Length: 266
Image (cartoon, rainbow, N blue to C red; front, side):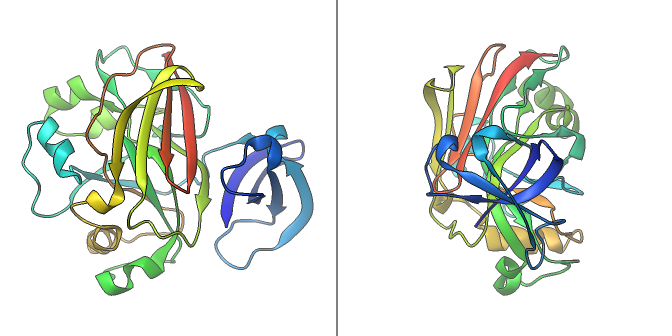
């Protein structure tokens, strides 16, 4: 099932995206549900063509927890060793944007880069100190993410808060896919002057994770309580590179969809 959050003529709703996986917006519809999607779904009976609504970030989390250097090749390209346990940092909720919302390049940085990632959306209420064996039971679903990073500020500060925390630095979407097996999915990033004219920058697989999803969810839950809608970014493959004004950047996770954002100056 694919759960979207969207704006329509009557306001904002969550809804279920209907149609074949991989079909374009013109072939998909979205059926609105009452309230939030965490629990039994109650359909309103309203339905729109996906092309006639505006997709938002599929969730507004209470926190975005990120895992750094979760691909050995990415750690190597930045000159770092592979961590012995998950390396965690946070992105503020104000950094979250949705599909086709602009990534805004801040004047403080001259080296803003893309990081394509699989994002985990938590569904359990109060997931705290969860064993690895039970960790996937707390997961509601998965979506695409871009952990946008001001690399020059990251190097200057030696920690991640400013470099990762600017408004618009956490695109999520296009929707949340439930029930997926994410143990071996392709993660791809493409950048170019238009969504239909892009070059591949990053290409990896979730099977290359140093710490898999269950390990990461369990580890995070032993640090902080995870709430419904919280998002965990699982790390990026090698190939991170610059974003410049006028670019379009797309993150695709196999079977989950594609998240595209334009890049503009602040």
